[in-house]
Image 1 (cartoon, rainbow, N blue to C red):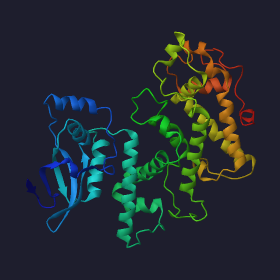
Image 2 (image 1 turned 60 degrees about the horizontal axis):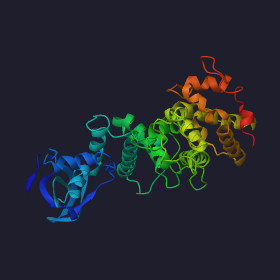
Image 3 (image 1 turned 90 degrees about the vertical axis):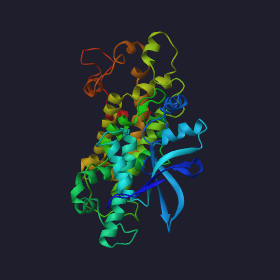
Image 4 (image 1 turned 120 degrees about the horizontal axis):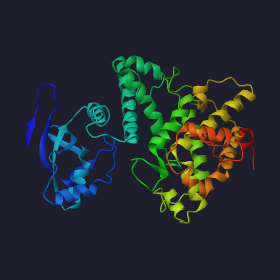
Length: 395
């Protein structure tokens, strides 16, 4: 065991530690052990260990280690060795480190530096953690109570001027992450967070480019974090609640009890062309989840919401759409739209697997279909253009 300290550098030691003392730090590194584990097990089994030891941290007081040893880098390698019967793991362990520095360094390694690229959902989770850290640092710098929320997002950005770009990203990451990992999020089970699987119909990237891109206000708010919180009218909280409600309508009406993970998404159109029996509910869910299609019809949800506020005489800011409370009649209209969208015959038209659904199209392609009923090449796909006023009526 060797200790090392260079000036202001962190103190650390190298050691082989029993696995009973090791715990995964899912705050600094929230990435779960995934599909690469099999390959690592094979490597270790063939006596080809990975060269870099894992990284961990612990606390020490009066020369005695207190609590757990938290592994935040190398959890895959550690797990692979444990499964092969290894009982002691070599690690570099930091003593009493600045956890904010470790969190920031690990985030940068998987994002801006691209050492080992984190998928987008992990990046958002880390950004959310960094946002919470910056809030606490702001309180400490200003001598505020630990639960103070009398300052705004803009105050935070102004305070951390040297990293204002990062702060704006952390704020949005916190909003995205709180929706994605909300315990009430029914769509979560249908999202492929790694973006490489064939079992789930939606990629996290698609969710981010549609639900989050359209409906999360992209700028900083000047109202305090606790503004109208007691009335349940806080703009950010209302935004998150209502985006989640929309997500759950989509989950309830399109995916739950309809999409079959056993069938998945692999070569669905090819299987249709070969005569395979793909159930209609699964086919509808699969096709509506194509990113370019999802992008197009979710845009119509924005138009439905805007039209409601305009016709009821309520002035709004379009980019803050989900920060205005939606009355029940508006939610009914949105749900009716989704129900009527599902019933459109083109989603179960198997002949279209050779043309319209035969390859990846773009947003403009589907916008034209919804506007005119035909493809840009003139192929008739629907009897006519959709009528949003009819689509929001109960059927």
